[in-house]
Length: 416
Ligand SMILES: [Zn+2]
Image (cartoon, rainbow, N blue to C red; front, side, top):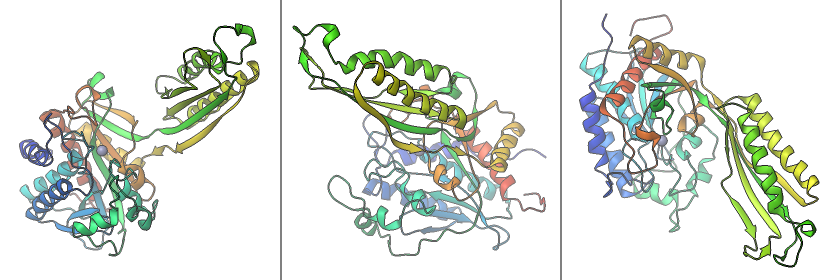
C-alpha cells in the first residue's frame, strides 16, 4: 500500500494567501491577537475549514476549533493545530504552518475519501504570542486549566483594551462555557525557530520535549568611590566580582554539555558613571537544559559560584531565582507515532528538544501530546524574514498526516 501524501502546492498557496492578511512591507506579517487582521485571518481559516466539511466553534477565550467527524461519535478527538496570531514584525510560518497543515491533512483525507475512527480537530489557540496581551500561550493555558478564564479576560493591551472587550468586539461570547472535551492525543507541527535541523541537514525534528528553563537575578552591593584617589586594594567594587564570576559561569555551562544554555542578558551598574566605582551591580542569568539532573546541577552551581564569590570579595549581595518553567516530556506514544511516520516516509529525522515554549506545553499538562519540527532558514523566527521552503513544509505536513492517521485509528488496530 502506497503511503498517503498531502497536496504541498495547496498548503503553500494557503500559507501565501494567509500571509497577505496583515502583510508587512518587508515580507512578514502583523496579525497580533484579537486585532482586525487576526479576525480576518481566523475568518479565512474558518471559511476554508467549513468548505472542507468541518464544524467550527469558538470557546469563551477565543480558541477556534474545526472538527472533521470520526466514524464513531463516542471516541475522543485527535487534535492538531497551532496559532494564527503573530508578533508585530512576525513571519509567515510561525504557528500558521501548524494550523494550515492541519487543514491540509483534512483536505487530503477528503481527497482520498479516507475516514478515521476518532474525529480530527484543528485547534487555533488564541493569543499564543503574548505580545499585545502579556500572557504568551494564553488560550491554551485557559483551555488546559493553567490560567483562570477571568485572569485572561482581564488582560489589557497598551491602550487599555481588555481581552474581554476585544473578544466581544469580534463576536465571541466570553461567558460561553469553557469545555475541554476528551482528547486522545495532540500533535503540533511547527517550524523549529532555531538552527539545529538546518545545520544537521535534517528534514524532520521528532520533538521529545521542551527544555527546563529559569531566570536568576544577582544583586551585588559595593561602595561608590572616586575612580582616581581610591587605591585598587581599598575598593569594594562589585564589577571585580563579576570579572571573577563570568568565566566560572560559562565553564559550569560547558561542563553540562552542548545542550546547556546560559545567557547573561543584563549587566547593569549604578550609578553608571565612568569615574565612579559602582556601588551596585545587577545581572541576570537565564539557564536552560533538557536533562533534569544536569539542569538542576547547573542551576545550583550558578548560585554556589555567585555566593562563594561574594564571600571571597567580602561583598554584600544575593542571587535569586525569579522565574522558572519546568521542562516537558512529550507522550511516548505520540512521539512514537511521529518517529514511525517519518521513517515510513524515508525522511532524515532527528530527535530534538524544543528551546522555545509552545501551546503544546500547556496541552501536555492534560492530554498526551507531541510536536514535529521542520527547519527554517538560518533558524530565524519572530522576524519578517522568517523563511521555509515549500518542500520542507510539505515534508512536515506528510509526517503530520501519517502520524495523525495512526493516532486516529481505533485501539483495536483498525486500519485508518
Ligand atoms: Zn509559534
